Length: 397
Image (cartoon, rainbow, N blue to C red; front, side, top):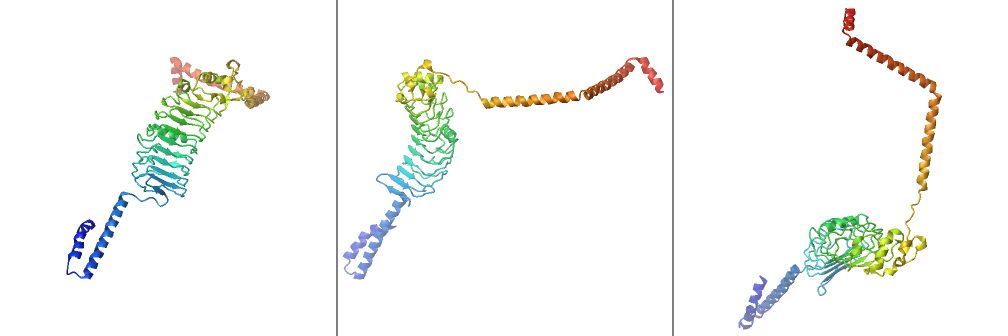
């Protein structure tokens, strides 16, 4: 309606100029009408722009030129519901978002490729909390307090996510199993970089990385890993970087690693135990070229080899540890034997002191059994001999 009025304005304006008999008051009215219609036109344009372009959240800073929205240190307790559609980089850090609920990013953010949720005290990732971000390539969830992760947190099918950072975020020992279930859904099959450092992980179950065939960089540093199962990295044929530094590894027996050629492994700052169990690893270490700075790998045990580089070990001199005798267990067995022996002695003593009574009791039982058996024998003889049977019948008569 405003647009049609504006098309008539030039004619009205011409009439106001060309009309010879028009009063000054009429000209003023037409000028006022022109001004009002012009203002309405601008308001209509602004309104249409606001409908096409959502407003920037009040607690955030938006830059259309950089295609970035920042919500940093704003004490947010939930993810804002609307963002400008142009956003490609979304930074929501250092807030108090305890739970990333289902559909937290349900707005259509088709251009969003980088999402940073670092340091938000997030404890729970619900199913489908990140499912609607179809173009997301990088996700940073580091420095949170994760305790629960839904198996469908990252979606129900293949996604475009290529980098996932979960460093310093696990506050539950079972979270590595939850992550394994999320990976097995196939939602992370495009993943190329995964960071799991600083999570105090002690064990990696078989099949944890079975559904990320495109993974190239895996960071497991600063954890508490003591060993690796044989087939753990079997499905990671594209892996080029593996960081296992700053763990508690004693030796490696993983045949998958021994056969890799283009992989670069970081193994420094582990607790290498230099006995006969490290023989295969030490032999492989002397021939392989995929270990970064192999000279930095030092023995931490036994005491006589502490501080010696694993590369300098003489395989023939390695000794197998002698199992330590468990003195506490032996003491328990000895004590149990003494108690059983005392019980046996007491039982024999009771039998000895009551030998006459026991003997008499046994005789009584024997006599009672004999009388009972004689009664059975007598009845059998009567039933077996017809004459005795008739005699018995007549005597009854």
